[in-house]
Length: 106
Image 1 (cartoon, rainbow, N blue to C red):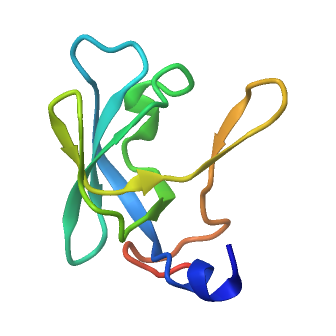
Image 2 (tube, rainbow, N blue to C red):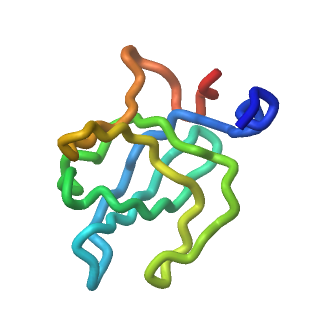
């Protein structure tokens, strides 16, 4: 990926308002995320790392400009960003200080 392609990715901070397990799935969580002027539903495979109640109110980085995708019959309208180390530990990418929902990551 070159710099021009990377600059096309719209990364934003969203606040998780609702988090719940997806029925008939061990790995998936359904999130409702506030991006300031818009709420989106995002499905993510992080249920093995985070309990839904741990996520509510957390501000996290998301890819905002992906085409919606159906996952287990649920439309996902973005992607949460996380880092994983060689031991399988997962950490969500969160801002280091308070910032408004919808803020663009540059």
